[in-house]
Image (cartoon, rainbow, N blue to C red):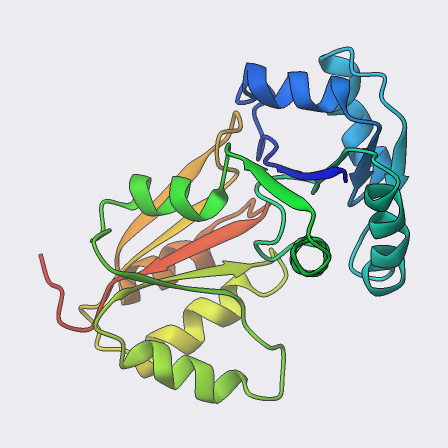
Length: 227
């Protein structure tokens, strides 16, 4: 019986990779990558020459069976996403679930997670939080936004550069003007930035930003939090 390793990878800074993670990637039989081209940079940086295969959201359902066959044959597999922890808004859940069902060992190798990095750096309450990931683009989006506006706990969202202004506008329309938020981008990278404050002020800063790039993590404080 093989072992499925879910290995967290850096979310920007290649130095944020543990010795254990490198060792695992060097010693498994194959590495399943969300995008083999993206992962090549990391693997080359650490001189990891293990064979790779593609495992992403568009082929995850049909590739799970092939991964299980390898595990059945005693191979050890490492699964990595482009950045962060597999399974968190990235492929990984289906493979982990099926491996458990078939009696294989599943081992998560801890490391970077944009969720926790942004939450810790936001200066907003961390004792209770809800991770929402990416909201639906259309169907169900309004209901989810209304639910977030009514939350007592801190809420964590992912958003793309193309929709960040829309998301902040939508939150501002539904939340009290004093609601605290933090918009985090380019985490752990050279141009890391956290725009934090009351939602109306943050909305204006995002709108006035002349060079908005990167991927975003948005932290929304609970409705009863104030400072």
